[in-house]
Length: 374
Image (cartoon, rainbow, N blue to C red; front, top):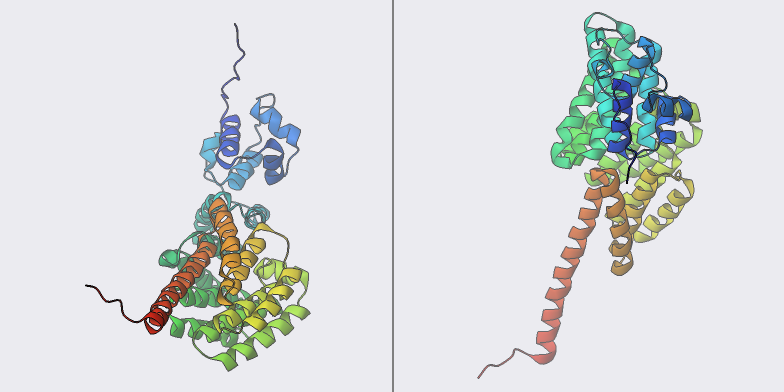
């Protein structure tokens, strides 16, 4: 019986498109949306009905896929335009919003490499884009890597800080210092965390409202972990006020949706759970659930928050069920930072179990006395 076999693609573009879709489990419609082209065009490229020869378009596609231009048959010695760099950065954040971190990481790493060449040649217009690329890379690696690997994200934020200081851009400087501080907080170095977060507030007074609000929120998070409850409450009140006043464009372009009223409410929930004030924790969790966008990232975050609060309040079975759902989502999308929160919940449950077993043994001894062996 004769069979028709699909022809192996012979052009570099057809091979790379098909390989990219297979690696990331994408349909042609999804890849077409990534590349900002019609789905029929992607199909014709893959079937080699159209042989793309436009060098600029091939280079654009290579940038969007995070691969070297040579893999599409194009010499790589070229400079990105400002428009091309902005398009790739926007594409990376779109992938982040969809929790497609495995795709976003190589794209932004390739962009950083390309922009670094242009910055070395004195192109200061691209220095701003390089800073924004390091911001995206810092966020992606902070989400994808464990706390033990936080130095990778810290490197990107330090590079962002250096570029911001050279550009004398206070908004970029505020964001860079804020996330350097948050990485130190995550590592448990609270003194450096507070120092960097207060520097973000004090050294960049002309930063825009979104950057300031985001920095103040993360400063509040560091304060509560350092035991400064008054400082925490003052910082969070300011963060909430700034979030309510912020414009959507400013928040999107500066913090890329990572700071808003919903994130403030979720931070209140997390901190009050840590302080064992479960009444306030549940109140703010309800506000966060009503306010945060309905995306995979935020819904996963909310599940970890809900699980932690339930466990802390003694509703262990319900909390564990939700923690399991959150863990499965974290593993699926590679969000190891959120998965670490589930590990924290497990540690709390194990501590509770030890305390309960110890108390039960003491109660048993009182009720029944020591067991006598003949």
